[in-house]
Length: 75
Image (cartoon, rainbow, N blue to C red; front, side, top):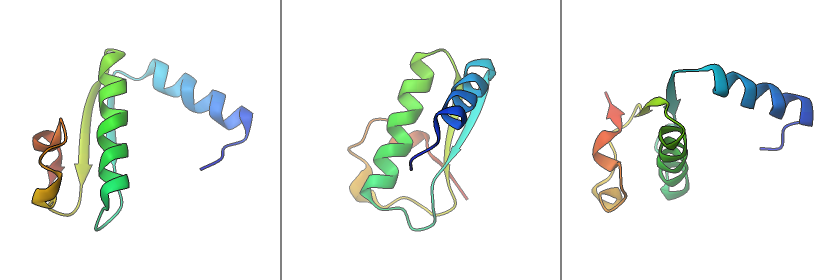
């Protein structure tokens, strides 16, 4: 995704003010989606945010090697 500079600044400012963040990914996530979900989760937690990574689908077992796999909330 390519955001205009003003939108990128607004997004970063919003995240800086947030204490808690809900991250979601698309339906039937592939490796890129799960990797991005967990990567952003770790970065935001490193900044002191309380983060909940979520997906509407159950994750495939092949992702269980990724740190944070067991923390993804599914329905």
